[in-house]
Amino acid sequence: MYPYFYLKGTTMGNINSILQLINPDNTITANRALAHAIGMTETIIYSALISKYSYYEKLGKLFEDEWFYCTYDERKMTRW
Image: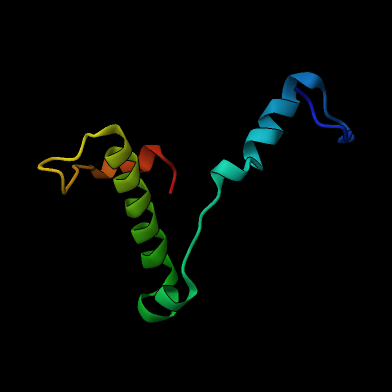
């Protein structure tokens, strides 16, 4: 399924790359009050960890139903 708009200079071959770049699933949500309290970078990291927690919870893969293990390299692979 392709969008109803045309981006000058794009072809159908590279439009998927453009759509992936602006994909709403590829966004970051940050709480403003938390960002003011601890800083924006820290808030983004904290939000990403909450997202990862929710992901593992949905899959039933939390250790002892409370925690998950995530290395620095794993986090780098998710580009945050």
